[in-house]
Figure 1 (cartoon, helix red, strand yellow):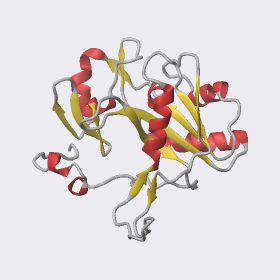
Figure 2: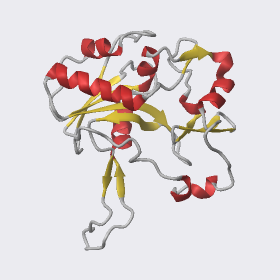
Figure 3: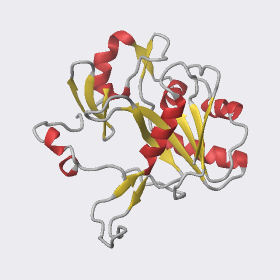
Figure 4: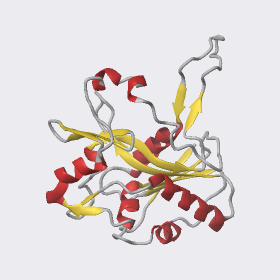
Length: 234
């Protein structure tokens, strides 16, 4: 697998995202994954706000939010993340929210890029940074994707000693997002696009947006949540 981060100029708020991609990506071979940082997707949608409104926005953007020592622990769109994904870094004095409908955006990019470069197999990931419990440092998170299966299922298959696997799955989408985020960087690298080739994925025409979601009661971290009441806002 090869990972190529792409250096770009600064992306401007409400700029056309597709034109920006084609300006900096001149060729995409078949069987590739294009990773697009969620920040430039959000900026293209005008998803910015004043810093003074951060706490109000975090609560509005989340289905669950509690303050911690340094930030807010939130649940947004079925994902646990800090501050509902709202970020001040590289935002020119503003807050940048997560983009709306990242799966829809990934699907549109997938369709447009496939047509432009006359390719059939293409994955698109809208990536963001995330944190793991009890671990230091950011990893990648695929908040939306298109063109490939986000989960590889081993349930019912056998391991090398013939034992039938009962729970094993591989989180393909977030693993690829993490690889891309590692190369994109978190500071002033200015690399919001990444091209991954030779990735071990199964390309598909339509993705299941719910394939990576787990009910809270079935989640490994459920003991941390069992005493917390939360749900969709009315």
